[in-house]
Amino acid sequence: MLIATPQSMHFAAALPLQSGKAIRDYDLSFETYGELNADHSNAVLVCHALNASHHVAGVYKGQDKSEGWWDNMIGPGKPVDTNRFFVIGVNNLGSCFGSTGPMHINPETGRVYGADFPVVTVEDWVDSQARLLDALGISTLAAVLGGSLGGMQALSWALQYPQRVRHAVVVASAPNLTAENIAFNEVARRAIVTDPDFHGGHFYQHGVTPKRGLRIARMIGHITYLSDDVMNEKFGRQLRRALDEVASGDGSYHYSTLDVEFEIESYLRYQGDKFAEYFDANTYLLITRALDYFDPARAFGGNLSQALARATAKFLLVSFTTDWRFAPQRSREIVKALLNSRRHLSYAEIDAPHGHDAFLLDDVRYIGVMRSYFESIAKELDGTEASAGASA
Image (cartoon, rainbow, N blue to C red):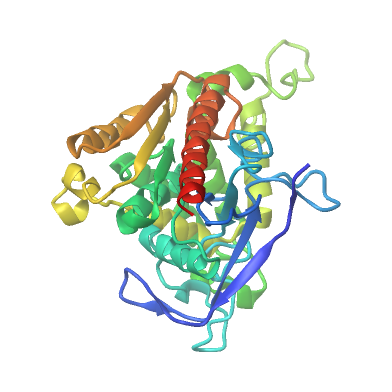
């Protein structure tokens, strides 16, 4: 069993942000798995999605139920084999799982950031990750890997630091959000900011948490992560209990507008309640805004081919047929742009029923694609190491 050890690194120097502001004296939480080889060429950076963290694999000592969120993908003998790769998971700035975020002290004021935490973008996260890699002595990544929002970071890595990335693996992602996706994010944000306990983002000093807003935000998000087929298969129109017959015994039913009657209602409320207990409201606002803003083609008049022409990495893109949050045609946009730019790429479109969440699950074809691709990267590294040994 892979035992994970949380780590943290402090950065005193200011990090310039896309907004024109900067943040200094910040910490990044991270975990590493496996060993860095002699020439530091076997590092794989894993970028996380909205509500995940740096804990991507393994369990914490003495906590058997603390599996990392991508534990089926990363570890000894798994597709991203930690016997061959040195894997790094980083918690993004603004998150609520250890890295500096809205709940931490602003060194400029001595008070909790709250709503004053600066806006961060995917590009800012990549810049901060690059600083961490510098501190770890890693100049080039064998691969950068991410799903969903993590896939956007992987794509951005290939554009911001093309000389530092050999392979970019982009799973269940998109080159930008559609108007529909931005709309879902906005409805979720409005649920949070209109919660009476939000207090303009400074709820910490009031000793409360906008749990009602967080619950609704999570319920909205969760609906978009599942496919219609999976929801019907798991829940259908199943009732939690038989509807109560009216006492008169006339065979009519008693209906309620407030009670939880359907299994899908119970499931969504459970997910919302659980989320509201551990996630930060300001973090949710920050991360969904970073999703909204990501659009590498904007600086090129909307021409994605021109934007991706900067990349020199080899690419693997994976999409899932029932993912309507980041539909396969969005991945195909990236594929087409890379082909237009004559970049080396592989593309797999997996016929899976699970919706957007499929990138976290154990579909045999998906796991097989990932295993095969990372085996080819490992063989490249073996060849590089052999060449280096021969020349030495």
